[in-house]
Image (cartoon, rainbow, N blue to C red; front, side, top):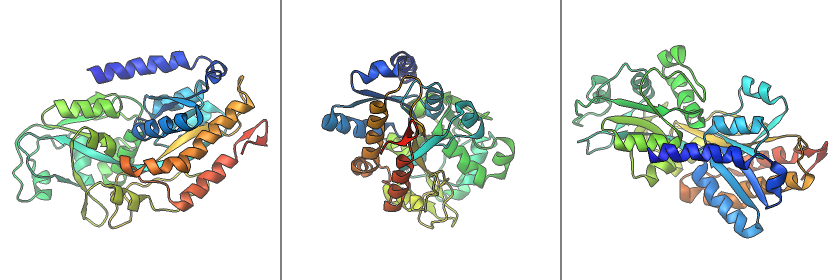
Length: 349
């Protein structure tokens, strides 16, 4: 697949381009890598930032797991992740890492069902059973019960999931763990899990490509990817049992929560009766102490200025791309986190 090949090339490119942070500083380029979930938004914000400041950002969309690895290896200035660091990742990094919220977005359940001319309703119990390999055809009675009056074909279900370490997978499995007891017991939540069934695609791009070209496929993608690729996606039942269409409005309703001081919070399976239940913040990850390797104070300052722009002026780019912008209270939390970053023990901002 061209998409998957291009992502492999990107992963190689970042390894090459990130050999020396000090060298890249000479051409006014900051380096980032990670989340494909946030890539459409970052692309827009970083292009605008380069126009305004002449500071370029080379962000490689290689998945949250890849971004965390690059941050661990100190070959990028920041990582992009849709999942907070877990205990093992934090231990490998061995130094405090700040999680700065950038926006929130929806993970949608995409599908390619030949002959289906209406929308599709799903809930967590059925979705989990599909991904467990327990429901294998589109006309299964459990799916039919959620879609009364809809003629469903006998087409076999082809499960598509991420093959790389993925924040999108973390969001999706975090949701399934909350709503499907069998999934919680057998698989659980993580950026990379042992998938019981299906085919893997690399990145949101890879999953979208596989779903589009595979009759009977079901997958999960960030909302912007589904819209850009003109893909069908399901309404998902929330806690109230109401089927919610993933939109900017329903994502925003799910995201309207008070952030803790470290900004690490799960939004899935929201209590909001009108909120979409598979929603998450996405974070930029940076070292709290920015003096490491041969980094300069000037480079650390440029990084924080970029992230400050993201949580302020950059937020106007969220809604047009179907991401929920940070609330005023979330911006205040993000500001406080950024102000806690230091260089040689002294505040940068």
